[in-house]
Length: 420
Ligand SMILES: C[C@H](O)[C@H](O)[C@@H](O)C(=O)CO
Ligand SMILES: [Mn+2]
Image (cartoon, rainbow, N blue to C red):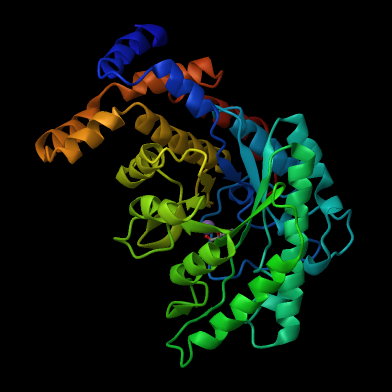
């Protein structure tokens, strides 16, 4: 049977529930930009003139050959991945991906001009850009503290870097016609039990207040703050905990960013979305996959990823949850990693959009938990794949695993010729 014939059969099965028009679902799905993180392409190396070791308590493992070592290579790899992913998306940059024409420019002196090539590339490919100040892999972050550092001079350096970053985000927004999300994550924390949890948090609050006091047009740049439970070297205490940023974001009208790898293993971000959206206009996500710890594995279409999609759709929050990805696997082809992870995120949303969510909510309201469970389980074996395949065909990207042939060909012709 053809992709179209399979689709027609599958469409009938979903539409028999009423309330779901697959064509409408496709229209909605096309409108959802996923923020694809550039740093999967070069193991969070960046292009600064001074080579810095990756720090901040995050780890990239693996040494699969062919990683990008120049902006041109990274953009080429991103283009290949984007050609295999349905829809129009955003690319999420870090400050360390600045292009400074061979001159050393420290983080606190970065300007929009240092991202002009990224903006021109984004315009050429119809992409949006998001941004992140980089508060790690730098001599002034060597002891693991930045915005909460006891030394004001260190704090001031990072405060200025974050202010510059917000201005760069606004530049992206102005040039590309869609606001950039500029997300602040800091590694500050202690390996062992602190004697004072409050003082560093007071300093972080003051630093953030100073950063956000800088006047940056909110229609061009949206601010987010990302929490974390622990890192390597900050196992006992992280200054920017979920409670800290949940409170700070709500009180200061910023977006709280939840990274799915930043909570206790049984704590599910899917379970937090509806509660957060009751009190916050919008939230942001870094969708990742923790295995044993915040390991940043490539996301798979597992129960939690599907539940995240369901919660976003059930809460009518496709425009309230800014979906970003955050995984970095250096043990596999990095273009394949982007493709697998981003296609899975989009599958999760499609899976949710196809569900008769109103009917399922009604069953719950009626206390009919038997039907609720039975149907939630039966939908796991509905012909979702036939709908997904047709969506890919309609969007002009390879169907099923055919995208892998293109990645292998790109590896033979491009990646394998790099000395990295
Ligand atoms: C590179 C990113 O800023 C980083 O992964 C951050 O988002 C994070 O999740 C740290 O654990
Ligand atoms: Mn993250």
